[in-house]
Length: 346
Image (cartoon, rainbow, N blue to C red):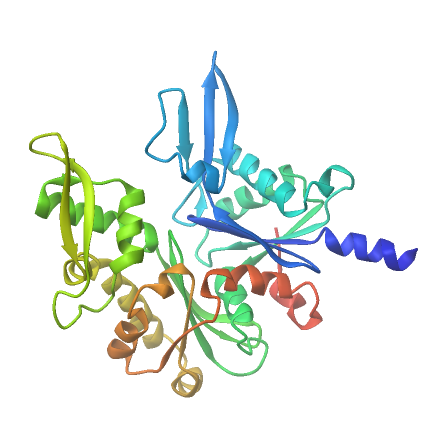
């Protein structure tokens, strides 16, 4: 009976990578069980707001909602912008991750990943949102540490490692050693900024307005951090012509989109170079051997590793399962006591 009780308790332990674009949940004993967009749709009727959809279903509604329905992102730049909506979204995701078992038992321990540059107020908002969603206890872990653990790096060893976690709202650059952060910096540039730059470029060059969903599809299909030798792949894009006001269609090339992404990619590369300049020399020697590890959805942008390697002269690797590295790393702290000192009280 005691063994069963212990397993039931462990099954309630949850690690959450609460991202600007996607939320990923790891459940102890089961691994990654949920990976959905951080979007919630709210319907207003007779002055009363209620949740219409959350996650993938809500994302399908973005930019297509009637007057009484809104599809919103409760997080901006890696931190909570609307705590009430964030609480409802987290509660829905945890319920879904635990298959409704949360209704039968009190939830257990929750570990939430936070940006290394987040303020005390921002961290308290994340803690409150998780607590109000039903967690019995909440601890925090910095995203670069979680990403490094998830990527299999030896973060508890006396060895310097560099992680660049490119998320939707922020890019975290950190040098790690002995289970701690020797140096970290955070820039509010990520996948969202890339989408904005693509939309701005098409509006400026082609007089066409496109939505953020279309901009994201362009980024995923033909986005590149380094321009190709020629025009590269060409893609048809549909939107609203700003001159005539009518629906229209144009073609954009891979080289054109690489030009649009030059500014956010440049900011990420500059953040990496600045971090290397502030790294202690002994840790710098380790990074020469180990290279730089890229994690997060932005790491999957074509030739992002080449852009950073060319600027730094160091080997750059993209983590396996880069999208879920942070949640996986946070979840691994449940079973390995050597990571206990990495977790922070909320």
